[in-house]
Length: 370
Image 1 (cartoon, rainbow, N blue to C red):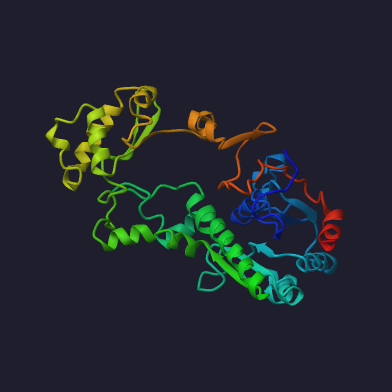
Image 2: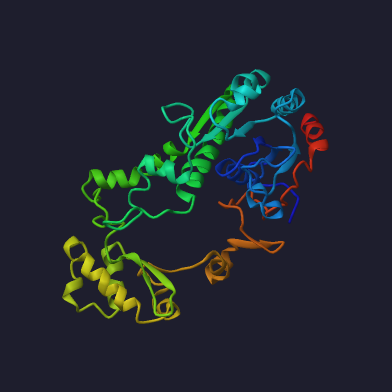
């Protein structure tokens, strides 16, 4: 892994209080793009922390110091680093950082330009603010989980992408960068309250717009993105799976032509909701008649809006993903390369995953010298 720091965020300093889930991922994203991210690890791993060691991809590209935040010395170490930070990331329950003496007031007093990022599921305020929860609970409450299932079934449990990463980490990253821009123009820092319930609800904007226009209903299986035969996934003869998303009429016509259904009148009206269940079943039977590779040979790369459903390992070897170098393998560990991409300030590939406390003796001196 390269140790050289470059990218559009080079020169930005972020202090991250070690945690789990979206906070570390937000720090990784900023580090991927060139920010100098220093994570404050515990002297010993907490019982709730999974020790991923050299496989801890969300910690890549960061530097690590170890401190006991329950001691005056540990708190002072963090405050000393706050003085030189552009932003801070913490993912504790509301009030924990204040009890440690590291809340927003204490940190902003030390550095008025600091952008203090708070990552929680429920938010800093509200009746549930102090309750425990996880990704599934947050997106259930926000409405984002509602459509993740078929009619008559409970929603499936998705991986923690919609909540923790999408509605949480990415919104925190945007909030921190917006806050840094404001601080650089005004000299005034602030607190960013990034709640997964807020972010995942915000991501519902398109669906709510479709609902308001009558194109999306609250009944599962009856809307454009969860019911049609032409926007679904199917199993193939070899057990592999494929996806079709031929939403626009011209793409749907092409799909029907490719499937030999152009003259079948049953497929004429793509938006007849009454026909969707029967046509989904017919599509299922059709796609089950050939292997995934056979369907790829027929449909991939056309405007039929098709893609095979790949595992991460398969995705890494797909010609398109290889051409874009979307994935890489470092030390035997498959991981994604930094995203998005920049023409003038490209980021390097994944950098090293630090050992806990590896940089304790050098970070404070390094930051204070700049």
